[in-house]
Image 1: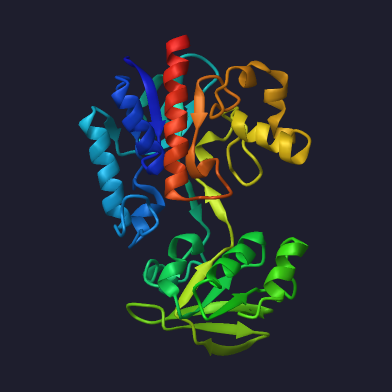
Image 2: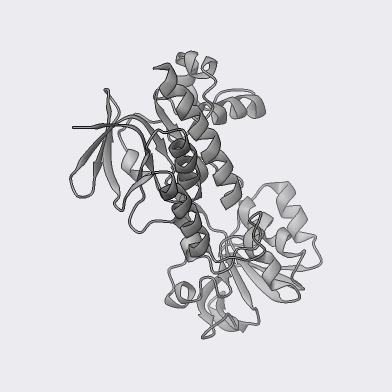
Length: 334
């Protein structure tokens, strides 16, 4: 069986950016793109905050990434990885079809998906007024009224971001108090543009081709909220389930640890996260300078499966490029 030099798991911005760099370094990368491939951008109608494009659809942007990678010889498999074996060399990935791929190095760039309410109307209007990213889509709601669902720090941040564009921001929370940090709560509760709807749930998103209102239930009573946008901020789920029992360090929410993340958490929290113990036990993981390497030598990670803070296409691309450069260096040293 042929052994790949680098296998990239994930066909979104991070994985495709890494593929371009590794292909140009003559590493002939194999991308296991997933099915469906492309990540969250495939569900984004308009992208206006990606450098170099005033406006482009998410699927068109992914196609440009992929065409660029293909030009330099990247190979693609449109399948998912069902399990891995990183306990010995070469590293082994088993695909959903049962096929095994063996590789000297692996870059995990599987991204993360936003949690949704799973309402049929919500899914139908995604990209048409329903969003999970105020930084990405807030500009489209200039002069309009919008609602944010959630009660954590992310929901508070989304609501505050939207006040830069919207005339009114409703925060819909199913409980009678937030779980967000006190400072974020104060900022939201004291903002003149924000109104909090306590003990409230969303029952339906109204409108055919765009959001024209939201059916809500407060303390058991139904009513319609006049809003033209709905933002979900109830969490994200990294696509890392296939790494269960792989030995790769993963936090309680499913995000991967890399040497760089552990170093940052050590500095910001003045102590290692308990799941960074592998790095503390193996100082070479830091000394190597491979900041995108996981606790397993030769296994790297980049993009939204690591980044729980920014979650932007542009930051995922940057992480993918950095990880690809580290992979190139790693392969030259083994």
